[in-house]
Image: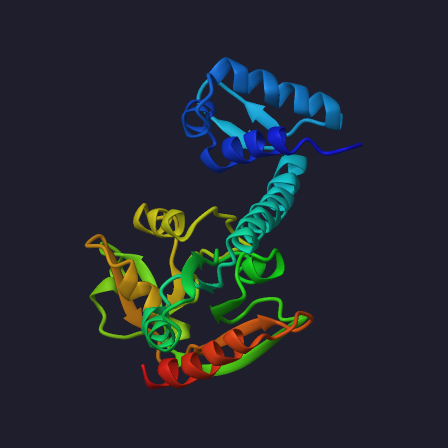
Length: 270
């Protein structure tokens, strides 16, 4: 069966928003039309993708799997179309992905000063699958935080950063100056395996609402600071390794080599 990309985009929008009305607004179509398209898509696939109630829209196990596949497929299609247009214009372009909280702007500025004719852009790497922009072609290089699936990728270590415990400002431990991992024994911890989430913002919202504590990188804590959350150092928690990453099976052109050289020196000094 051929996959209908238009219906896949419709489904992906509903899966992201968990709401037909907001998804319809994003897609610039009427909500009843979107609902009919999703029902037709489910009939074509011969499985239910969504559980609809009067208050919410949730993904079935099949829907969750298709949502993951849709991110990869649609990202690859969009990247391919963009590269075709760039080839038509004769443009040179470098796209850098980055993990939440990591800042790659200084490296891009240094690269641009050497290559002012090259277009540069950035794309966020989602925390649940940071290597995806490299694998689907949306980015040529990524500044990522371990862990991630490094198979088929080449990594250049940049450094380490400490992890902190993120918790509600009202939590009893929030009055401490620092913690150890033993202090967190018995606390409900929020991780990608214990609570699937669609964004890091959702993660912080769950923490602020009292659903648990999470160990996060120092850079993410600084970038997403908010008054109802507290970030405390955990003295014996392992640090997070940061690295530059490229696909190992693609030709490494001179522009990419130049960026890696500049970024390695720039980011290690940061």
